[in-house]
Image (cartoon, rainbow, N blue to C red; front, side, top):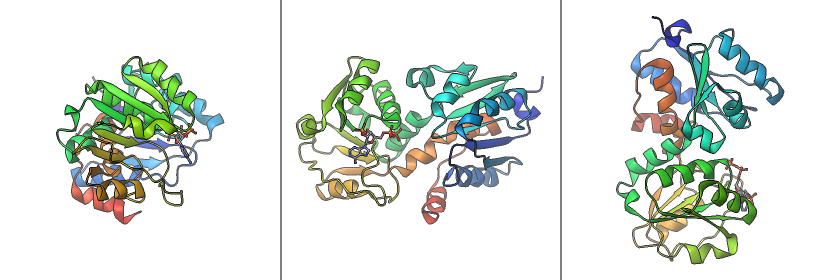
Length: 282
Ligand code: ATR
């Protein structure tokens, strides 16, 4: 029996609105070339009001794709309009990876897997910690919380400018997650082994926050999902204070792996050359 990959001849997309700044075509293009696969992966801009129709055409095959990635602002709609969302995307209420199977759209969310794969690669042993602090309570924060909890971190402090949003996450994820106002940051950092920035603070053009990391446990890991610049002001501060730092580029690269494998049938590797390809484009 022919599977959907054969039927739709290896064409995948990334859609968002806008989409022209997405680096995903560079990542998948690199792997397609490296593995010698005759497929394509391209940016396909879809406005929010046109997204339901895009999903319909994806499902009936007229869009000509075997699957693809979905980014802002379509992640929630992609989950809602998919036919077979997995447990990860269902818990988050958002999907970033879609693929066709027997005329049905399957959906998952790979952001959390990308996050932990990056830490596994660059901060081995990070998951022996029991307490993590996560700054921010948006969509990215959710995926990070889920992934860290699933790796056994027992206490996850979520700190956010708008405390009510942190509380929503605590309610959603249950007892492992505690919500705090931003004023409590220093206090909850005491003896934590992992600090994650999931806000846009420190991104190019954004004001740099000043955070004193000294309350963290000795040898703690500080990471940022922002990857432009690679070493954010926050990571620089943490490094100066003697902590292990991990930049956010690896999360972007690793979150792309499961989709590529679904659409093109081969598991790609995140290598140093790929990192350099993306860095050159920044
Ligand atoms: P994403 O889906 O990418 O995580 P989001 O849902 O817009 O994006 O969430 C952005 C996060 O960055 C939020 O936690 C936001 O705080 P609020 O919930 O209080 O808005 C946080 N954030 C953005 N700009 C910030 C700033 N200048 N200071 C503090 N937090 C900020």
